[in-house]
Image 1: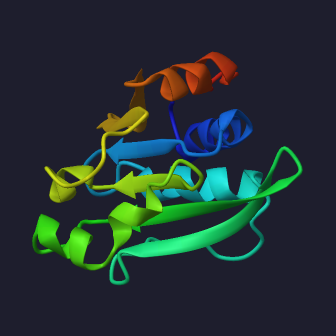
Image 2: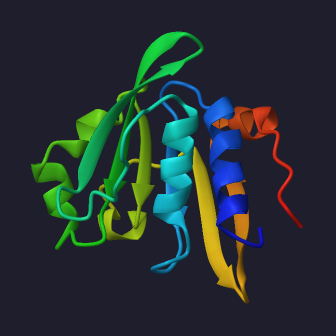
Length: 154
């Protein structure tokens, strides 16, 4: 992906490939495009309005339509979390219930209490653009990748 438009296109493609219960972990340095990707995904899934990184609230729920059905997508940003216990104390683990779609920025801050993801997305700043790598780590993640139709601007 060479620019923000490529990141947005991936978000749109991911929105079409989502399934209830999917958990996606976003990896990358500050400015790598994690929030931009999530914003594009949420808007493509039907959210109207702003999408900001929940840096201080740690989580932000959104209601979207998925296949004509209401769906909750919860966006987490664990960057400012002091310890994994904060994740547990906030009750976030219960959100990973097989129904909600959970998107987590900075998942390494929640290890080892964070439930395992279905999909890892690694975003790396590369020159004037970004590199992206998607890795499925469950059957649900694999089926998401199989549904994914994405042609980046190369």
